[in-house]
Image (cartoon, rainbow, N blue to C red; front, side):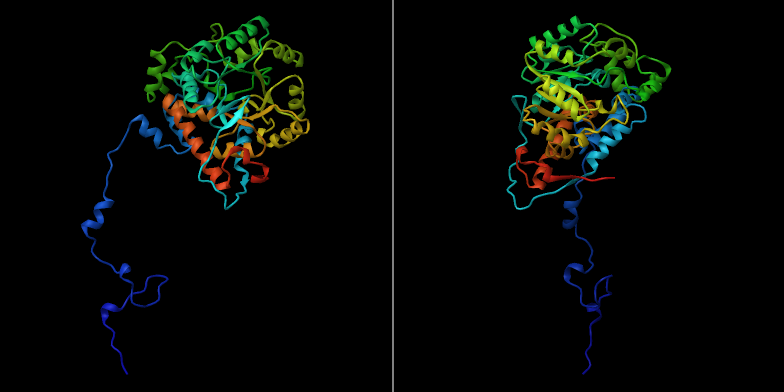
Length: 431
């Protein structure tokens, strides 16, 4: 028997389909307006600061915005590191070389990112690290950082080389948890004055930085001729021509000075080399411990042995840090050092808090550090990129990005609270 097939039922087979009658959904037809209408929802372009910041989904994207909006010298001061910048690259690569090991079938319907650090709760396991010359990056500077930290319920650390005073930061963020970072000077009386001001202003933690016996060779700053305050030269004026907002803010606000110091003009390296004490020893740490009655944290720990020693000399916490790669190039990477330090302090039954900075560019980086033994983390560049991208709102956005990253990473790991993170959740891959 012969069967006749209607031409309309013959299908020219698409790739991967056998020659058969096509399902109705795959038959071509002229689109109806009712089908197209939901797709044609054109939005009016938005050019506001809020829209610009909301389009940034990562810290790297905030960095891109910051680079477009900030003159080269202050941007490079933030973005750069010492010599060939190997240390900074290696620190970031260390986080990229993390392999997560998720658990399944855990209830992660609610993620709690809060943790305790140095006797108080922090809503997130990250605080803002001390950064110098912050109003040079964007005019709101330390005020934006401290207020954003206050709103987020996390600590803010003011640098000795900050451009807002201890008292002004305390007034700007009266409900915030403010810490003070100290560089010990050759003039101990001036150091003591700063310590007393920090205590009077309500700072509960003193963070002494110990890795600046001399200044690192920050070659970007040398090439840019960076001085404090920035100098108006033909080069900087040309650079300003397409970054007018930064210069308008810079020129119409209070002149840039070291708020905790007397007025100084010169390069960053010259300031460090002329002011800070290359003769510091553990005896000076003992003096600080006797002088300061609050939490004492030592920042700049780069060996297991030094971690043990500063704790033995009374430190309540340490920061594993190579100064963001800005001092000694080819320095140890904090994330690589972390498991050894954590194991050593646990073996000694130490209660000292272990904090970590350098290289953090995402919430996943923070989760990895916590899993490997850190109690807390600090961000410098990550929040400064937000500051340069949009002032206080940009810092808020940086914190929001990190918080969202952390919550998502923990949920995918099968972890609902910080205390559940442990070394089994991560593996350091070798390059």
